Length: 431
Image (cartoon, rainbow, N blue to C red; front, top):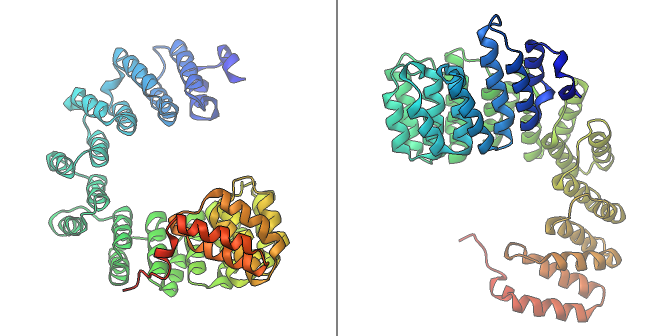
C-alpha cells in the first residue's frame, strides 16, 4: 500500500519505510529508494543519503540479486557515494557474500582514504571465507591499526580451516604481544574451536577462568559458548552456574541449557527449565521445542509432550518440522500408544523419513501389533533403505515372522541378498 502513496511522504518518512517492512523485496526497496532520491533536497542532512543507500543494499543482498547489486553499484559511483566508508563497506560485504572476485575488484578501486578499519575488516572477512589462509594472513599483516574485530576474524579463520595449533598460537600472540583487550567474542570463538576438536574438558574451565580474571562478563556469545561447552564436557553443574550468572538471558541461553540437560538425561530438570522459560515470557524456538520434546520422550512424559506440541503450534505459531514429529512418534510409540503414533505420521505435513518409520516398527515389534506394522513396512520399503539403515531389514523380517507372513520373510531376505546385507551383518566398528 505504501508504494502507491509515496508522493505524500518526506525523505525521512521514505527512509523509515526503507528501514522497516516497506522494503521487504528488492523491487520495493529500489522503488522507495528512487522516490527518496527524487525528494532529496540540498538542505537535507548528507547522512540521510548515505543511510538510504546502506539500507537499500540489505534486501538486494538478502535476495542474492547480483545483477541488481551491480546496477546499484553503478548508481553509487555516479552519485559519488562510494567515497564514504559506510557505503563502501556495505557494498563490499554484499559482493563478498555473493561474488568474492567482485569484492576483491571493488576493494582495489576503493581510494586509500576511504579504507578505514571497518572497510579493511570486511575485506579480511571476505578473504577468510573465499581465499587461501596465506592470502588472508598476508592481508591481515598489512592492516596498520588492527582492532579486536580484525584479530577475532583472523582467529576464526584459522579454526574454520582446521588449523587448531596455529589458531591457539595466534591467540597467545594476541594476549602476550599486543595491547588488544580480548573480548567475549574472541573467547567464544576459542571455545567453539575447542568443542570441534574435542578439547573441552581441559580447556573449558581454563577459558572460563581467563574470562573471570579479565572481568569479561558472560554475554550472549560467551555465555552460550560456556553453557554449550560445559554441557558437552559433562559438567552440568558448571553450565548451570554460568546460566545463572548471564545477566540478560535470551532464547539461545535457555535453549543451550535445556539441550544440555536433555542430552545428559536430566529430563525432569529440562522440562522444568522449559516451563520456567515460558513463564518468564521468553519465546522458545524450534530447537527449544525439540529439546523439550526429547526430554519428554526420555522420561516417558506423554501428557507433557502432548501439551508442549500443542503449545508450539497454537500459542507460538511454529510449524512442526521432522524432528518435532519424530519426537511425538517416539513418545507415543515407546508408551505403547501405537494408534496415536501412527496418527501423527498420517497427519504430518512433511514426508516421514526412515527413522520415523523405524521408531514405529520397533514399537510394533515390542508391543506385538502386526496390523499397524504391515502399513508401516510398505511405506518404509517404498522410501528405500540406505546402507546406514540395513538393520531395518532385520526388523521387518522379524515383524513378518511375528505375523506369520513367511512370504514377506522370503521377500525381505531376497532384498538383503540383492543389497549384500549378509556380508555386513554382525560387523562392528569397535576394534
